[in-house]
Image (cartoon, rainbow, N blue to C red; front, side, top):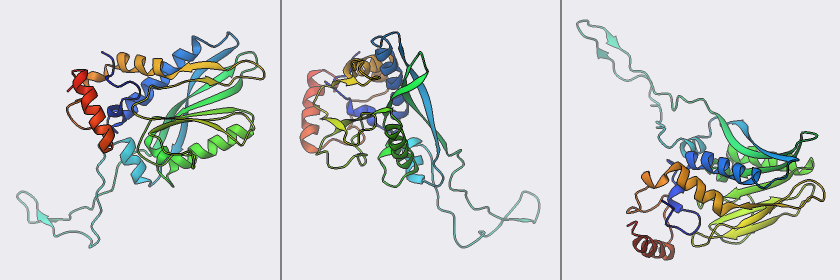
Length: 261
């Protein structure tokens, strides 16, 4: 069953679903590109690793079921007696979270096979990348600077309405794609909204080789179908984050027409 939306499905932006969507969509983009790249190139999934530390806002977005509790400031609470003995047991204080805060994020690399040289990096943004001051955002921006300075093309796909875009002054939009060609400080970008189809763009390759097309709409449709997301979505409810008033009315009409609500 296809998504009832013409482009990005806003219900897939939910923190409960996004980790799976991120994984699935990266895989479908890889498959789409490898079907189009010449035999001298290949797209491979790699992992970017960073330590979130005490960045609790980012951790809550990445793992929405985590419960963070503030430890009491007044020391141990009044003790309680154990069964059958008059021994007062001291109440412990709570550790805010018991998590390994080493975060691993999947992204794509396009490599030139003859030399193994890295040609292009494709990043699909996660919620932590859009939190100002977060470790996830700092890690992404540092990697972007390093990649472009070292002669690697950079493509950044943002399919999340919440948070702060990683490039300012682009004008308002729900979603965006940012591209920096190697060693060029001025980038290019595409803006689109929840009512729009996902664009097809050209992914830069080495030297004078022509850009390879990435059909983001086809990759998204394949991800939605292969992961059976319709089983996890209740279209009778509002998406998280919610749509604005005008888009909410549009979505309600669309969902009724598609018999999803």
